[in-house]
Structures are given as structure tokens and as C-alpha cells.
Length: 281
Image (cartoon, rainbow, N blue to C red; front, side, top):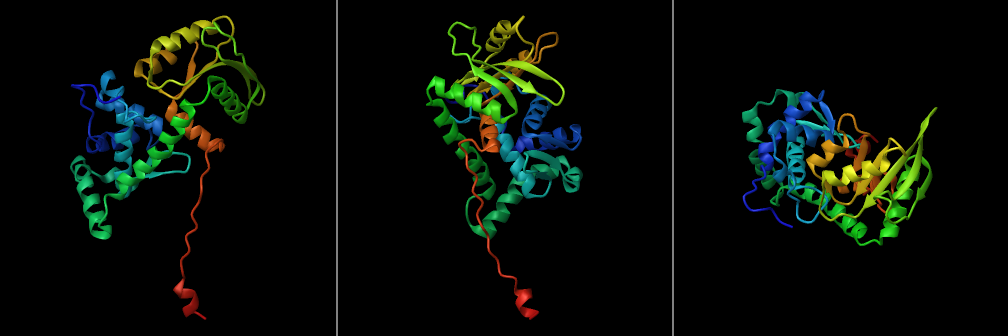
């Protein structure tokens, strides 16, 4: 599925200044999703732009280009990120002007071309991040429906849910299972739906699912391999209605990585020689 005719997605260099603004407005730090949501608000991006997918992968083109923007900002020391995926603005980043930010892409590319003679390393970092998610999403989308439901069951159990059951009932208005999330002193029942959507999930899915929850529970969770539209996200958190938590394809990939379910992270050992040690003998 490509970009619809007439839809113009902002280039990553146009998203760098809004990204810095978003972090400042978020108290100097934000998760990937929080940063994306704030940038979308700052740039007032319309629904048709937000719906453009990046290739056939788990992310939208907007999210993909924001990843480029983050990476280039990190290259010049304007941003930092933790192992938990939280981005923060540095003292150097807070001092940058809009004009200085606009000059960053050329600065990064010139530096990397002179030092390595290869394509921009920043581009490769983003491509590498997307690559494993692309492969994982392709695997998830080819799983049998029952297998995907069992995977959702395992994810909930590994995340602290108990009494997780896959209902397997047809005609149950999209409710695929029930679990109990137990906190220290309280617990509550959660209904969940897990669907292997290829593309976007709209607000009608959220409304139908919430309708099935009425009178049975106040907590709902929708897990998908696709992407939620902005309208679907607003519907999920609409005032006066039971909230529905959303996990899209990209978040699902990250969750499986954190839980180490079918995703293995290998650390490469780097060996260096400390000349000072030998000189001091």
C-alpha cells in the first residue's frame, strides 16, 4: 500500500524542530509514542497524512520520518535516549535555534561522508530498527488466528495478568479473551481483542468492542498488528466512556522484545587494548 495521490508527508528535517519543541513541552523527556503524539499536534498533521504507511511495515510514514529526525538530533548531541525508549533533550539541545536545527542533516552527512565514505550511518540505524519489526510483523500476520490469540494470552500473563482465558466464542462482538490484572491491593477484569489487521484500525472497531463490554467490565484492551487511526485513539479515550487501551503493531513488537517472547537480543562483545596498562608495568 503506497502513499495516496496528493498526500504530502513532511520530510524528516522538517520534523526536527517540532521534535525539540515537543520534548520541551513534555518536561524535557517523552516516550516514543508521547513524542509522536505531541509532534502531530504541533504540526497539525491531518488524518490522511497520518494514515500513510511506511512500506508494509509496522509504522506510519510520519513515525518513520520522526525516527530519522530523532536519530539526527541524537548525532549532534541534542537528544539522548534510555534503554527503556525514553527520549530526553540535552543542555546542548535546549540551546539550539531553529536555523541551527535546519542545518543538522547537512552537518551529519558531511561528517559521516568524510569519516567513513559510506551512506549516512543515521539512515542505517533507522533501517535496522525497522528491519526486525518488519520481519516480526510478517511472522505474526501469518500465524493462525488461534495461535495469535494464544500469543496474546501469553503476553498478558507475562505482563502480570492472572486467570487469562481465550474465549474462542464466535459472535461475541470481538471479545477474544478475559484476564484479571492484579495490583498490590486491588484487581480488575479486562476484556481483550486481538486482531491481525494488515492496515489501519478505525474508531468503529473501538466502538463495537466497547459496546460488547457494557455491563460486563469497565476495562478493555485491543491488540493489533496494524495501526490505529487518530480517530480510533481519540475514541479509545473519549470522555464519559469506558477507556480502551490500545497496542498497535509497533508497540506489540517492542513489548515482545521486552518480554523476550520470540525476540532475542544479541550483544556483540567489543574488545579494545588499553595501552596505558602495559605502559605502566
